[in-house]
Image 1: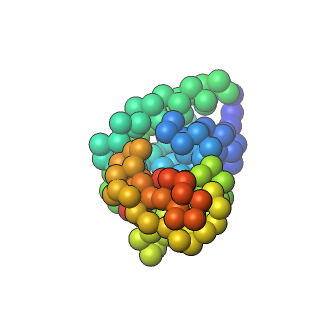
Image 2 (image 1 turned 90 degrees about the horizontal axis):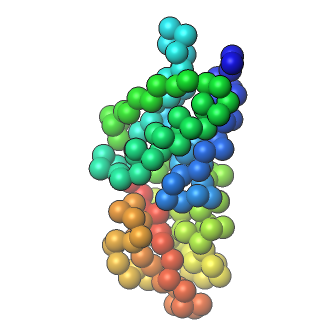
Length: 151
């Protein structure tokens, strides 16, 4: 099948992150580029951190999603420059918050509780359900929540 770069981006935008399924790999910012080199599609990814255990799953999910559309693809990992939360889309940040995960903030902590929108929040632990997240709690609704750390 002949695909366009726009189609490739659209299809990749439907591949969910394996750890946070409400956000796509494109929204997360791990898809760095999509190119056609010598007739071969190359998708470049930057893992959220060098030792991310989901990297192999991400690569397999990309291959599976594109091969289902008749597109063979080579995956290339790029670790420099390192992935940053600045690469997340605004749509992705909104999806995180709707899911109950506070999106990254330049201030170094969540602005509000993703459950009740209270600004009275406190850090419980620098480490959350994955190394990319910290554990916080709302003092108003008393619900714990993950905060996606700025990296």
